[in-house]
View: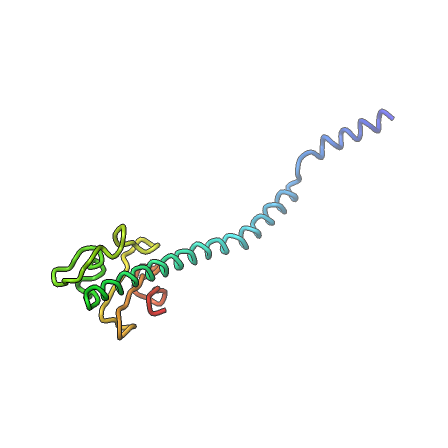
Length: 145
């Protein structure tokens, strides 16, 4: 009987570690899970930035429309979005800074773009972010969408 217990104890001592095959299998499983999960999180952060840009554009658009109500016109392209913060020289109805806290930057750290009259909104103005690539392209996010 003693011999049997010694044999079992030896097996327990020898089986405490993982084999190389078991470790490789765990690494492969972790790699597959990472390949499936990481892109989903990456897409979510980009989607959150786009949503934040759309919210900023809606807020700036409201400020531009309020400027138009007070002054009877939209800011010119030359005056730009700065007309919402600092009173332009040739307006008489300007009542306040139209945006609290200054002009926000888009979620990628770039300035929002403004053009009046608009090319995409012929009866109004164009307001947009260049998006993730920071230049005018198909991924731009604007008030025409």
